[in-house]
Length: 441
Image: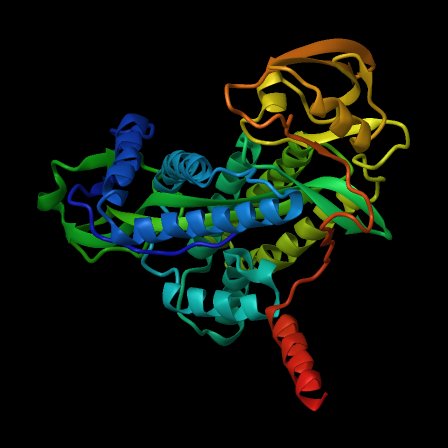
């Protein structure tokens, strides 16, 4: 998970009213309006379109991977980019509501240090491009050395909210959220799904300032307990004002599904992310009451996230892969986007036994049967132990190809190697060594 920041002051600040007792609950309607306004603000921010371009580039990389693996386009760039962008914008409203409801401010997040450290950690391992690691290390440095200056509670509270937003985006799934892939895993070729997503996230955060009480009479009033994450006390005769600030961020998620269906893997990942976020948020808030909790929250930020990654992998790899070759059976891994099999309703895990009466035992039988197909076809399928018939047709001038992706075969398919670690420094070092050996030869 990663994020980027661009901010501009919004003209309608809101205020924390202390001691008046006139406001008992949060004005959720007004907060939702402010959160939704961040979407409109994003449309006029050049940085937002830069993040959307990053989403497009990520989708393009996935499309190239699909074509190299299956020989056909199976990932429409425009559809996927729009889907991820729309979901990211909705996630931005959700995250903004949480941020504005808790009073997290952008003042002392240490952003000038956060991004450089995140990029430095990226060179060590790609998954470290996440504010859980950079934020936790900066918070720990602040506690031990007093540098850099930042608010541990606000920084780690933001990390928690970004991760709970990621949990809901992961859970939302979607057609392009899980892509079929062939993997080399523990000495065998297996099928699976790559869960690689990237979302732009327009947010509305808060900037804390102090104004004379006479100037804030017409502003939005908040409950006595607000903000949940306190800001600095204002000078005498003034009151703390939190002014909404548009922020453009980005979230990313990556995993694989080998031993369970992608939907089940996403539910597990989302649950783990939610539990991690809740624990981190509570620890960050306790820091505002008991400062020594800052060290606990800082360690939990990066160590807890690392434990989250480990547990997610352990739950995935402790079971045998479910997408493997079974002799005498043609098992569907997935279908190609908008091709006849997908339009007919063929699903992942279906076992095709007949095509227009032809017995199907392997891909060669399917190729022979497809050669004689007319404009329509009937597939006899075993689905969850039940035999059903699926009918479909080809559109005029369409190639007589069903668009069914089978399980992989060792030595004949492009396989992705399962890496437990991916270091950009290691990758660069290997390339330098290869060039050195080539020049010596």
